[in-house]
Image 1 (cartoon, one colour):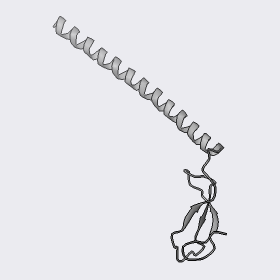
Image 2 (cartoon, rainbow, N blue to C red; image 1 turned 45 degrees about the vertical axis):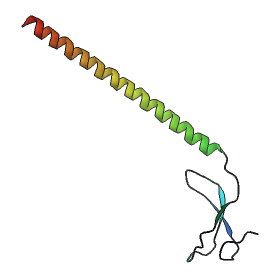
Image 3 (cartoon, rainbow, N blue to C red; image 1 turned 60 degrees about the vertical axis):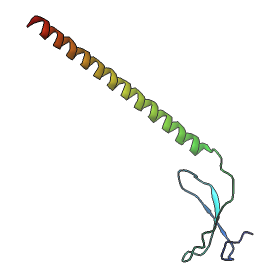
Image 4 (cartoon, one colour; image 1 turned 120 degrees about the vertical axis):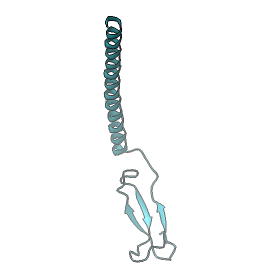
Length: 93
C-alpha cells in the first residue's frame, strides 16, 4: 500500500500521453485537492506503440529529406539555366 503526501491511500492511474503510453502511476485520490504526490508503478519500456511511433517519425523524416533533395536539385537547375541565359545574352548582344 502506497500513501500520498496527505496520508491517503494513493490510487493507480494509466498515462495516455505520447511520451508514456499505457504506463501506470500512483497519484493522490483527492480530485479537489491534489497534494502533488506522483510515483511511477512500472519502469519505462519500449512497447510496440513506441516502436511504431519511432518508425513513423523515421518514414516522415525520409520523405521530407527526399522532397528537400528534389527541391534543391530543381533550384540548382534553375540557377544554372539562368546563368546560361545570362552568358548567352552578354556574348551575343
